[in-house]
Length: 363
Image (cartoon, rainbow, N blue to C red; front, side):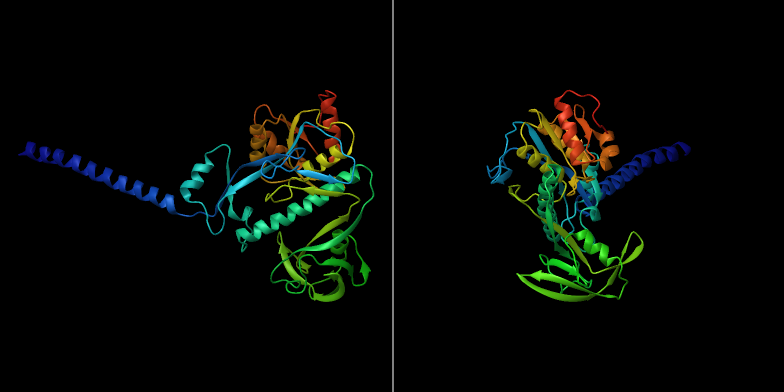
């Protein structure tokens, strides 16, 4: 009798194990299916295109940079700008499976959606803003190169982007030139923002602007926004400086956007306008925003940009000081990192590289 009971228990155990395995298999399958379709609020970054600012655009077959009515000097080396491509946007977020797959890929990075797309903005709006930033960066890079050469430049200030829901919305337009703040003439964005700092929320300010060739005055009440937990008075615009340049420079970069190619554009223009070769025939790449006085700013996606540069054949990479720590931790083997605090320091480093100097600024 006892033996029959034991035998019955033994006969039922395999069935329970089979049932457990079946349940686990179903759960795993359900999770796999959910992961394949479940959207997550992240964006995947990967190495993007890299182009030689001294060469031609491979798509248009036109020189990447054309300088009109000025003596230029050839250079057969490379000064490549680098980019980051991304997968996913607010209307088409990646699936959990795709995000996990990219997360374990050493050439990719998975970042929160709002890193690329500010809350409430569509992919089209972000692309439009990036296109405007690229245009502004190109113009600033020309000004920076000429400033490095000792040229004196005039400037004008324009409305770049108008933020919805703030006082300038519906009053100012992108492309308006700002001539004065409450009667005080201004030529630079920093002068406008410096004046506006004296106003409190609710104060009225009158701007003199030029639109479609006609001068007019508009009056706005200062609104309020919160940045990093601190409230401040604003009118709700982003301003850009456009410089009065003595030469015409055309850039054929296609649909690539953003400001991070500024340093490399400036180096290429400086190289083209000055005798000799700044590269010495080497393959140099880099990244970094640029200001008119040549200061180099940090960018995003440094790891992916270094990978793109190394894959393209670069041996040296110019890094903004604000990205040095991250770059040093992720630099591909065989890619020498050179810290570029300014356009002037980058020029001197490249000249030192040709001279065989070993003690160049490094990350």
